[in-house]
Amino acid sequence: MKTFVITSIILTMALQAANTINAPMALPTTGNVSILQVKSDKELAWVDEQIRAILPARIGVADGYINSLNDPIKYESTKPVLGANGIKLLPPPKLGGMPMLPGMPIVAKVVVEPLRLEGLMNKSALINGKWYHLNDAVRSYTLAEIKPSSILLSGAKGQQLILFISKQNPNIKINTK
Image (cartoon, rainbow, N blue to C red; front, top):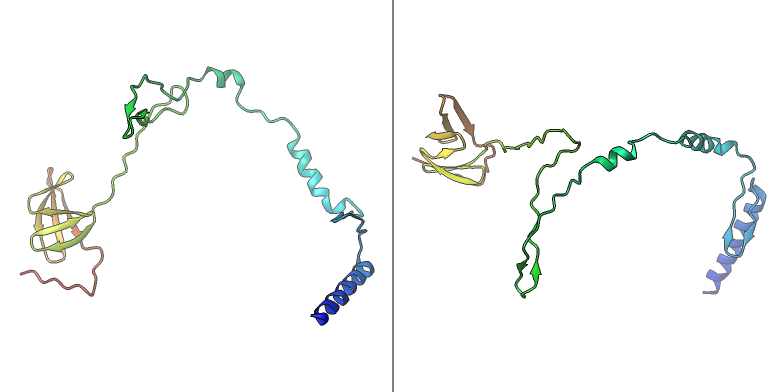
């Protein structure tokens, strides 16, 4: 323990001596806080340049335009719903697309997941997590034919779509006859 204390004191004194010899900056101390003073401002000239660049007032949307906008939240008088403990709760809000600016049309995007054949068993096909049989409707198609590794979907206008199994697990072997 004594050697540790003596070693730490010697290292501390050596570091203080090295700082006083090699220090290009003055290090005045005030209590436990050390204050660094830079000799020249050349090193921080780019900071001053950045500050001058952001000083001019920015022009944005006029306050009159913002005040003329309609409130995007549609308030409806709702009847409270009784919760499990008899506490009155408001129903959850109905979310809908509101235009971002007045006069902007509301455009609803419907994202349709592509059809994926995930599995085949006997005369059934697993498409996007749901099992279908022959002649079942799959979106705008009809399941027309099931083969050992693919299916044939027929559309109303004569279009045909062939789906193949996307991934096969080598550990599972199912024979259909």
